[in-house]
Image 1 (cartoon, rainbow, N blue to C red):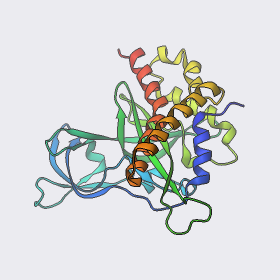
Image 2 (image 1 turned 180 degrees about the horizontal axis):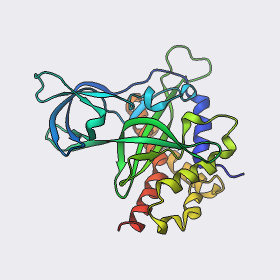
Image 3 (image 1 turned 90 degrees about the vertical axis):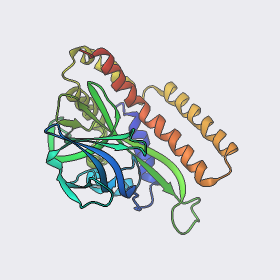
Image 4 (image 1 turned 90 degrees about the horizontal axis):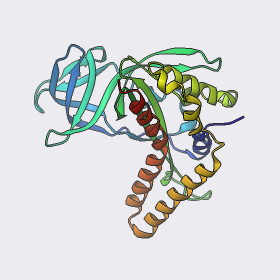
Length: 289
């Protein structure tokens, strides 16, 4: 049976993730616009907002990634000025959060959504979760995602904290712009050794549900699925060789270990996200009306 390309990365990641030190990118204050469901916009600062798109974690211990990484929240701490009193904004009142650079330009967008997944019987399941997730690509179909970064020991004989960069894992969420629900085509929360053979069917069902507003896209959904199938060994190998060539050049050119780790992580993250960006781009081209 065919398996998804992403499964290869999962199985590798599960074996190499070795720390539970999760970095949330928490900052005391971050400049932001909070766009409310009623259309009002509050401009000021969010306190203790978890703003990073990249997180360190132990995949083997995941049992609710949105909760572990603080995307499942009930309220936000907002200040109109850095020195003003805190206002609490309930998640039910929030539609979108736009993080701002120092010059006021847009830096990163987070959207509120509910979540649905697909169980092993290919049934749609409402997870009864309301989360706020970082936007990667916007259109009629939006891509959101979390990139988990794996660190491990430099060798089997190493002791102490795991600080050797290993790989990344991109976890995608697909959401129609007309829907309040996002779908998890690759739901790591509910993946186990007993349902690995059903991953491809669950992935396809989630894709069908997220794209059902566009018959033109669904006509060729089997072709779209081929991008994620293990059977494309030639393309998978070429992607691996291209990625490793870039990482080898970084190891040659960069002398600072922290900078080298960061640059290699960025390359892995870009390649992990690439097929999903292509999927969303194809949808938005075919379904622009």
